[in-house]
Length: 338
View (tube, one colour):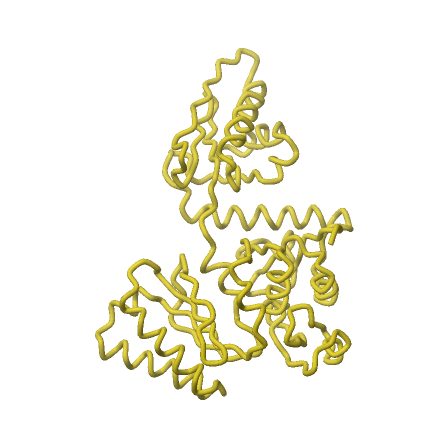
């Protein structure tokens, strides 16, 4: 996920109200039910210590949801009597959640607000491959690559790989998805150029030509976890230790932050100041970086704020195998040109 849209949250010291709402369910309620829910959100924030102006701003924004027809969900981030950011959600949250904390609780956005990536999809069989752009892009169905190979299937893998390279040059898709038998997909992937190979993942779902649906997020999470594991095995391009992640974040060396919300490190407390780079695992570290006061915050939110301010990306690896992804739920692929 490109975190640039979170920039407005990096410029305010907080504390912050963070509210996630199932907008479709909210609109389906009666007027009286909506009013009661809105009041409950306001009271929950007040009970957590939020100032009156911020409580009122959130309630007003919450009430306006009855007029919003597009999003299935909405998040509100407010401080100082103002809703600073209210991104639509592509996945409905499990009910309404309310939090008042030093930092905006942005970690759930990785699972709830991720835009569906543009995928170049190759459905591979022994008679060839159908290559399409999904969701429907400007090119629609790209092409069918028929194979009439007398000497076995492997030469056909090279033809499909070449076709994918040509299609990707025009489509500029975010991901290449290989659908089909594991061995056949592996043969195609091995023949892709290195830069494209790293963006190619395989899933067995969608082989009949139907949409990839829920299979894609799972496959993408597994793919990102595998990339992390490969980088970790090389010893220089990845880290998952919270102190090391904090150091890398402060030095703007995170290229991509990996987050698994149920990992124990995700909610580990760290210490933060008003600026995104003022973060440390010990209470006195933000002061060394110029912070007047240090307050505790969740590690995932602190690292995401720092990553957003530095122009890094983030991805959810929910459901990935801890043996390949970050064991504690937080990890990063690093860059060295910061």
